[in-house]
Image (tube, rainbow, N blue to C red; front, side, top):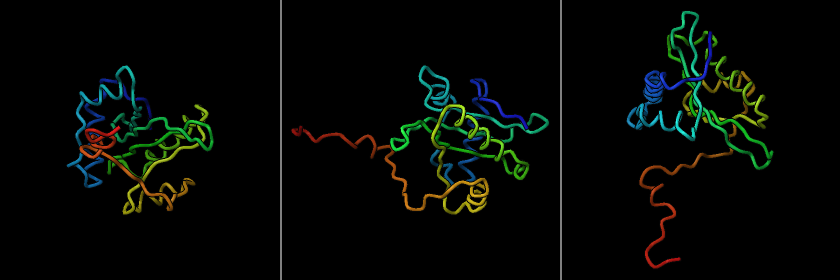
Length: 163
């Protein structure tokens, strides 16, 4: 197994992994990512996230992870938020997912992070069991809230005549 940071020429591969993950999660209809958008947000002047790629022993692309820095006020330390981790079905059970996660944990330690966190779909029992086997603690008392699209655009917009 080989893990390396993605570079701009990997954009078609990164986009393919994103689509594969979305299909697995039954969310393909939500994918708006394009190579152009990924180029701007992963490799532009102010990258919003980082991406690492995993390859099998034959250098066949097998998986990826996208992550970014977040911050814990309680710890007063940065953290790593794992946005996506995906291993192609044909490569599962070979340690690639674990390798990606351990690589990120090592990065978090090297960067002085206080924690690493991510979300997992409640129906994805194999992933939940995998994460727990590595020592991850599920935070069942937290609920994710999200604003996207029109709701995000309208949030904070004041009606005319208000201060």
